[in-house]
Length: 190
Image (cartoon, rainbow, N blue to C red; front, side, top):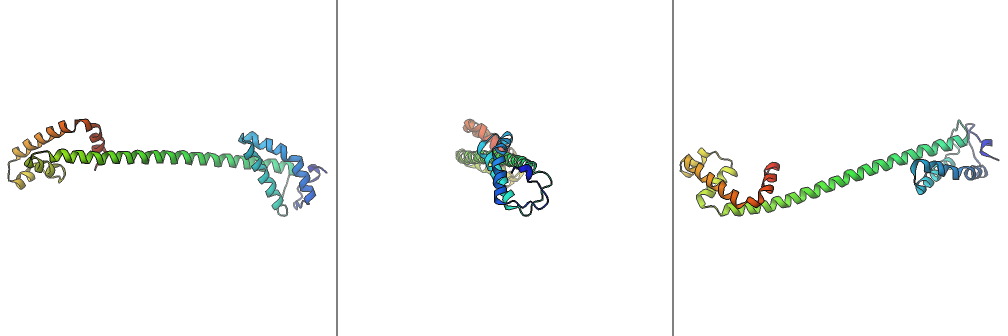
């Protein structure tokens, strides 16, 4: 008996003996066919085994309009292409996930740098003379305008401008080695 003797008649009720004939006759060639798509022996064999498993478990409900051989080749082709597509999706997800992990690690590193930078900046601000420090904090951290600072400290706007200028010169000099981090800090905000 050969598979050309067994073709779809709508019922497709295989006996165990008929199924064994189909399996023996086509298994090796179907594995080679699957390999032509996937280029991986183990995956090819899994696709063919899964195809035969479905053929056996659905033998009472399958409606094969062509020969069993044509049905098997089409099923193996479709299953192989689905596996390839799934692998592509999985690899794309893995790549995306790795990029996300790398980005998070970089952000964590940047945040650690920002934490360090904040400590260094606060330390440098603490080194300013008291009035200059107040003027700087009121301007940069509290967001007050020079007129508001002058009124609050009971000094002139010119004094505020002078104190801010001197504070910035001092901080620029004190923090010069941290300039690249300061620029990043200013770009991403607080």
